[in-house]
Structures are given as structure tokens and as C-alpha cells.
Amino acid sequence: MTFLRLGRLFVGVSMVAFGIQELQTSGHIGDLGLLADWMPAHAALAWLAAGIFLIAGLATLTSIGLRSVATVMGVVFAVAAVLRFAALIPQMGHVWPYRGVMSELFACGAGMWMLAAQVEGAWPGDAVVRRLAAVGLAVFGVTDVVFGSIHFQVAAFIASLIPHWMPARLFLTYFTGTALVAAGLAFLARRWVRAAGLWLGLMFFLWVVLLHALRIAHALHDSDEWNSGFVCLCMAGCALLAAALPLRAARRKPADA
Image 1 (cartoon, helix red, strand yellow):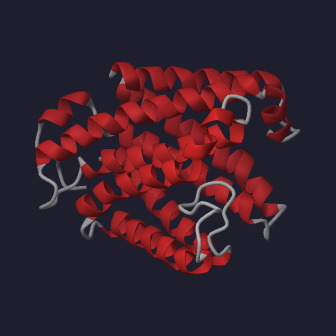
Image 2 (cartoon, rainbow, N blue to C red):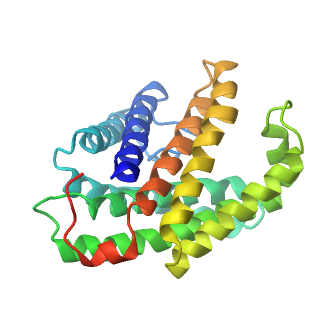
Image 3 (spheres, rainbow, N blue to C red):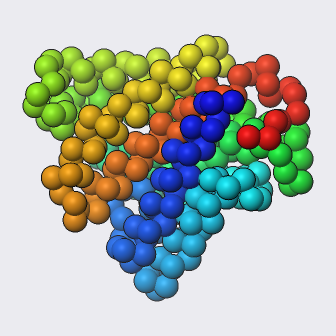
């Protein structure tokens, strides 16, 4: 299926990029990374985090052990989100970056569980990965609603990130926020999943091309810009993985990608 292959490509490339960044920054990544600042032996743990990301990326791109790796990565992302942000939850109402990055980690984990249900593998069994995919779809829906709410909370700031040559930047901010919330609700309701995933994936990919690529080009040595760009690409991939997971397919044996 085209959605599945393209989603895997986006996610796999992003995972490899995250692994390289863990090494480049010794695990000190402001946006999507596995390590919390309070963790000891940060440089050593960065090698472990890099290895985890690289294994996940290569498995996603090559299909080698993919079902097992994707299942475990869903847990890894969830654990990383809790370790990094559990103590900061009381502040998330007004400190939106914490809420956003925590949601990104959960969204990546959700995408990996949706991927696990769409490839062959000995472990886990079909019934388990189908249940995990259902949970992943719901979690991805929640995170999209969170992303959309942030667009409304700090609309002026997000509008300032949109290239100046694009008209009606504040309108585009509200439009994308609405689209994120609508897609998230569709995933939660398990209705129009394919359409929501396709259009959301397209929107995220357009952000990569029209927004992040330009920002990266003007700041080639800024690791935060690179990370943000690959986070957006990964979100595009996760949305396409949701599009490739229609609810009727969850009752059939997963097909090899």
C-alpha cells in the first residue's frame, strides 16, 4: 500500500536522523529526544539513545524485525515522555512547549504501534498488535488535538514562524489548528480515518517543504531547526500510517509491507 510505504519512509528517515542528533548533542535535545536533562551519565546514555533510534530507523526502512522493533519502540517513546515530563505536568497548562514535546513523543510511539500491526512478524501475535494499533490510533488522535489547541493558544507566535511571503499567516495558523483538531477527533471516533490520515500527512509534509526546509537552510548548524524538521516529517509519516490502517483491516491478518 502506498500510504504504508511512504509513511514508513518518512518515519524511518526521521528515526535515523534522531539517532544522529543524539550523538551530535550528547543527548541534549530540546525537542524530540529520549533523554531527560536530569539523567546522569548523559554522554554515555546518548550512545544508547542513538543506538535505539538507529535500530528503529533501519528496521523501519528494511523490514528486518520490524514488528518486534516497532512494538518495543512504542513503549520506549511512552517511557521517555513520562521520564522527561511527568514532573512538569502541573506547568503544562501555561508552558505549552512541554505539552507539545510530550505529545510528540507519545505520537511517535503511537505511530510505531500502528506500524507494527501492518507488517508480518513472529512477535507479538496478530491479536496483540491489532489491540496496540487501536490504542495507537486513539493516542495519536489525542496528540493531534493537543497540537491543534497549541495553535489557538499561541496563534501569534506560530503565525510568526510562517514564511513572510505567504499571505494570511494568522488565518493559516487557525486553519491548521482546526485541521489538527478535526483529524484528531476523527481518529478518536474511528471515523473517516483514511481521509483524515491522508490529509493530515499531506499538511505535515507541506510544512516540511514550505516551512522547515527554509528555516534549516538559513540555520544549517542549528540542531533545533533540524530536529523540528524531522519531527514534522515523522508526524507526516505517522499520519500516513494511520491512513493505511482502516478499521476493517484491523480484523484481518496484517499484510507484509
